[in-house]
Image 1 (cartoon, rainbow, N blue to C red):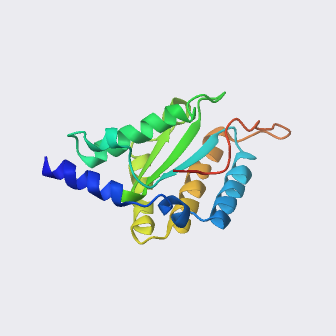
Image 2 (tube, rainbow, N blue to C red; image 1 turned 90 degrees about the vertical axis):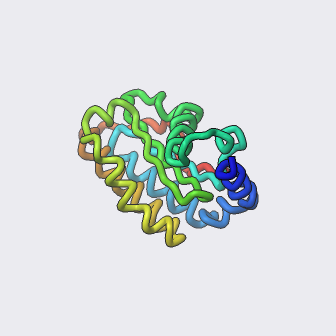
Image 3 (cartoon, one colour; image 1 turned 60 degrees about the vertical axis):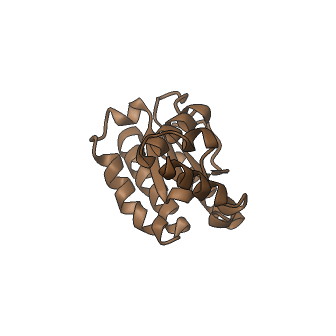
Length: 173
């Protein structure tokens, strides 16, 4: 019970502008341009969602924070319609500031082609940047590495284009 109360206080302590401070307008523009440039070379879609704190309904759950964060990332994957791409190759990069946690959720089209340990390995390599407060470095690295996987498995052929199915600009909450 105390653990959940402390968790709630920790998340409620986050100010409304925490996500905007972590990802200021210049970085939003840079990430949107990086996503757009990436998507010009493959048929996948990349979506970034940065959340300062979890909604109360997630905080009261008795599960470990790793499980709660994963559930939230899956929920946002669905809510943001990342799963609803033509080739089932959308990827959500989810960052939870209050817990310094990152989740990468990929649709089945890409998950079927990469090794199961790809995503945890990718998250581990970026977590140091996020824990140090280097959100720019961590997010640009995440986009770069997800892009490399999408380029490898879903590269566009000469003359082929990728219609933009999802917004390129990161969503902050």
